[in-house]
Length: 140
Length: 130
Image 1: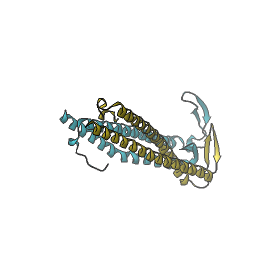
Image 2 (image 1 turned 180 degrees about the horizontal axis):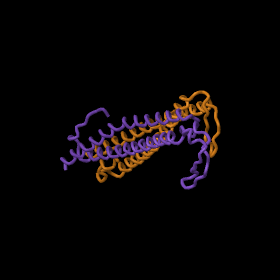
Image 3 (image 1 turned 30 degrees about the vertical axis):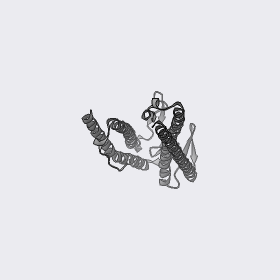
Image 4 (image 1 turned 90 degrees about the horizontal axis):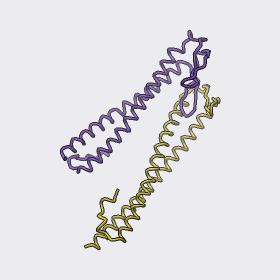
């Protein structure tokens, strides 16, 4: 790491090894990016849901609460200013709407930041792999 | 992985036996290193999760209501107690990661020793052959 290697000096088997290594790194990073994207979407949709549904005018309205993905029970929305948020490892925290919104925004921004950090690294790996393929072709 | 570098036909049975023993050892050690690496990955993600929760708890007002999910029940927990629990977990996981790191360092030392013996056996074998 940090040390430069001239690809053209490498033998075909070594190039193949390097190529496979980049392949698995790219695969790993791509799937990580996908999970980050998924997490971001969830935070955003939770935030949207919060702002759209948890309003004072919706207080007392009836809702259907999912017990499983196919079983719903009727309920009444009692308090539209308090929610419980899952902060991870089985801990839940009571928050009011503006605190909750802030929470989701913070999380979403954090995930976005992580993605922006990984994007150039991934791009660079793609480029390097392409370069390796090109060198391999000249050696065939 | 070291197999192909040696022309097995050219060495006598005794040397071959010695080499095989070293190769088996190398494989064993490599497997253990891999096992530890997987465990470290898991621990890392646990550490991450707990750090995120710790940061979130630190962020809260002192009078905030915190609940812990135990089975199907949410149990109210004191914020200080929750912080303590998570801190302790982080401590434990960090220590475990350190332990795995020293373990891998030790295994790598063993690996190098075996690789050295392989070179020695090979050198001896070529010296005899000439």
